[in-house]
Amino acid sequence: MKFFTREWAEGLLTDDEAANRAKDYRAHLAAVFHNLPLAAQELASEISIHDGLIRRVEVNRSSGSVLLQLLCGDQQVGYFDLDLLYTGGDVASLDTETLARLSRDRRSEALYDELDRLDASTFEHRILFYPNGEVAITFRQLTISRKPRADRSLEFLGDPYAEVSHEGT
Image (tube, rainbow, N blue to C red; front, side, top):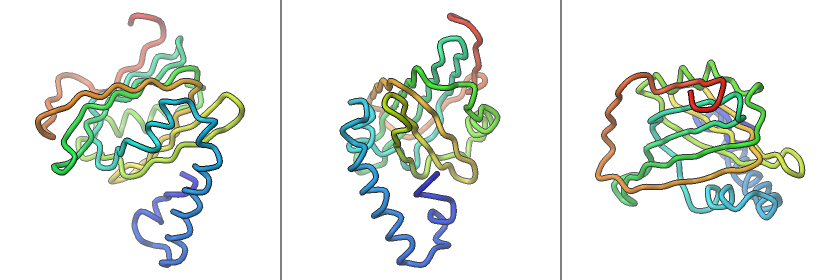
């Protein structure tokens, strides 16, 4: 995380430092916003993943894709399943160990996220999790799917983390 660090999230910065981090991120996002893919613009401006629970993660090394499935929302806005499919990124640089640990820890919740432009066609989504851990997922394209849910209950069948090395498995 570049802006919403663990120190920021835990209130360890002065009030001015904390306010400046949020202000700096808003300025940074404004500067890169129109260069982000449309789905990333939607994620940055319309979707909150705060308190999102990991439903499932699938890393596909051969296609260079990461599927992050979250359960997001609250009583005020309602609950929804959010599927984020990142493609064209550098899966080799992904911290899969942390991502696997987070997906298997039922206490894990997304706290804050940041979107960034790394170069003309590569982007990064950084997510800070509770109680600890963060991930950075690079991508060229992002596909978003949302589906309403009745509540925040999660049922886990099997391992919520999967890593595949070729198409279809």
